Every structure is written in structure tokens, then in C-alpha cells.
Length: 154
Image (cartoon, rainbow, N blue to C red; front, side):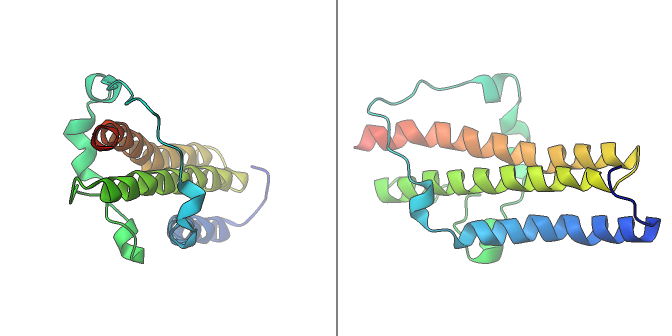
């Protein structure tokens, strides 16, 4: 524990700060311009990566993840609405935006260990991992599935 606070202060920082980080970073990332997340498409469709399905069983649990983007009038990523190239481009871009958001959330929430004593600091680390890594995995898996579909249409 790097910073010393009373138990009440630590509890308030955790109970108010962690949700605030999730919401603030998600909202902030929705405000960023699309051009920050645009990447050139590969000229050849990448080979399908079965790692996520074979070892992480992503198809069994991805439906359980919330899609927070619509809370801030963002692009919904829960279901594919179209296979039009412009829609797929936007969907891929939004997976990058979501991935960036979750990386920042993970880092900032992990920084809460600065004032949490043992073993609460381990709980904070576990929470930061559990609340962001499944989303990161799902966003990357989705993008890897959409890229070949988009490249095939071009």
C-alpha cells in the first residue's frame, strides 16, 4: 500500500472510483474522433484464428458480456446488423475503440492498488482483470471474424 487512507476513505474510493473510471473512460472514448481508430485493411484476408473458440470457448460466454457503447449513444456491437462494407468498416473501427477503452480501464483500475492494503489489492487486480479481459478478448475475436468478411466484399 503506497498511500495511507482510513478504511472509510478506501471504501469510498473503491466503491465510487471504480464505476466512475469505467463510465468516464467509456464516455471519453466515445467522444474521440473515428480517425483515431482507423487502420489500413490488409490486402489479404487473415487466416481464421480458432484459438478463441478452441481454447477460450468464447462462443459459450460472449453473449453474457454487456455492450456499454449504447449507454453513451455509441455504436452497438452486440449483434451484427448488416454485411454492407461501410457497416463492417464501422463495426471493425468500433471494436478498436472498445479495445482501447478496456485497456485504459484495466490500467486505471489496477492503479487502485496504491491505497488498498493486502489482500484487497489482490481483489482489485482480479476485478480489473475479470471486468476487462473478457471484453478485450471478445472485441479482438469479433474483429478477426469481420475482417475476412469485409475484405471478401472489396
